[in-house]
Length: 289
Image 1 (cartoon, helix red, strand yellow):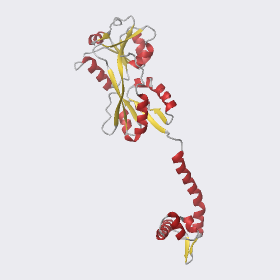
Image 2 (tube, rainbow, N blue to C red):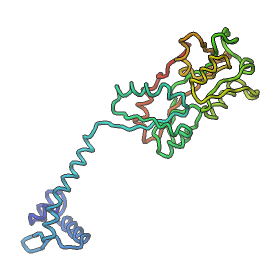
Image 3 (tube, rainbow, N blue to C red):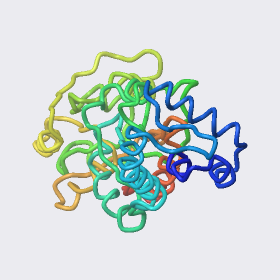
């Protein structure tokens, strides 16, 4: 506007900017008031820029060009780059999720997914604090301020040595879990522990002997040594069952299916839905039915 007025005609500036001549005059006066310096000499023949006005016009060109470039970059920059920070409530998902995300990048290059391991213990709180964009939940409650959708389920199975007394059983029952130590992870969230006990023992959970290890390999090795019954997700157990020294058993009464859900804020809906579609049916299955 100032560059147009430099030509000496507020009328020409008004026509170019689709404003009234009085609006242009008021705008110029407002700029001068804000700067505290006169930008134009007003004469009966029109406007002529002062020395300050000439300096402002000379420097404004580069600033306007930079602003136009920023607007262009915003419109046509790297198309669809969508950062998405993902956390899983249960550590078992980190067994298969990275390889699934690697495949996802081949088909959905616009998603830039990173795993936020540091928020595993409190995924919902991290969502609400905008520290992550998406959480994969098993037992956590998303709450009213978040969107929540079902994804898939995995089955909890029992792994014992091939020469264990339970190896020939078609399925295990509560009496088996009372008789032998349960080999579990030290990282299992407390809500998931409560879900497991309620699922296998009901309300009156008996005292059960436990062996707890921080690493999956230690859990598997303890089961291989015949020290007890390893309690694992099917997709954690699957890679260890090909050697013939371990067998997996299901719960005899019903399938111990653990439901997984995706939770996200509404401002992360676009990326979360793409991720949900990609993860549908992603985890490997141990049993066909």
